[in-house]
Image (tube, rainbow, N blue to C red; front, side, top):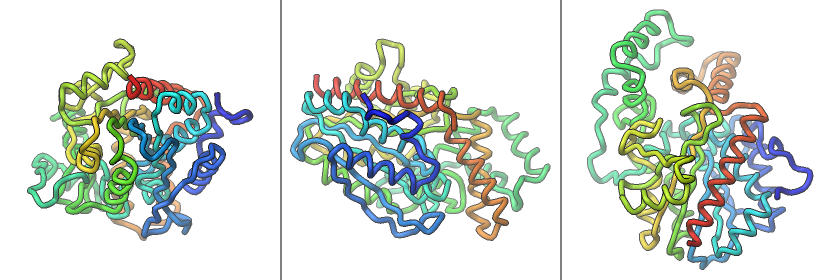
Length: 369
């Protein structure tokens, strides 16, 4: 059970600085030593930023469960709360220890986006589109070329002609196509949405170092990466986060499928609310821990309707291009993005923690089998 006197709400925070403090405190209370990898930039309030890592279990554990938060910055408000709740969960930790499973908590993969209430890194890179061999040709998102000019207008809120253009695009092509073109990832427009970069970003390199340090001695690795923004509110979709591999897909379904109650979806067969994406983060585990049998999911919690979410992302990109924006407008855009990726209610938080706990326990059982 969780530490006495701590509610589910208490695990969550209203700012990056508060979230980091709660994570470090929860790790210390669990008897764990956290290590921070300092970020080169500062937070929105001038605070230091870091990717923080805490490990429970011996360094030579053969079975490793990785739990990560904040890949997409502002989504860390959810993921951090899940990690703090897990660190306070004495039964979860005991069951992992009894099964010989070490747990690695990686807090705030993208601390800059987390602090600045944004989705991208300080390089304007979507971290989950940045994992490529950059010595080879990058994927080309030809359809994005047509959409790019209308996604971010010169002024915000968008003028009527821009709204009409976007609305017409969706009416003619469909919402699913609009989502797919925007979110797949693109590598031509550094000032565009879902930009994957042309080199490994800071968070990419830092995460690879963490995986090398903590994963090279494990024979089996499971990874749960917490995301928000797609699907029905409060529902945690379990999306396969691995290569298109039948054996891995079968393991993921056996571990997390709940005998069909919570099916593991896939971007490869169209069963996921997510479109097909490129440059995904899970690729790093194959490269940095090639000795391990890997099984992973992204746990994606729904918040708002997808059009509202994408409108918030357009606003974020406009603010990126216009740092001189009036403070009131900048604050409103950040608030809009926060609300698109985090639902500030007890009911939503309780759903998130309950489903995450189930998935973590299932991963422990799967690794131990």
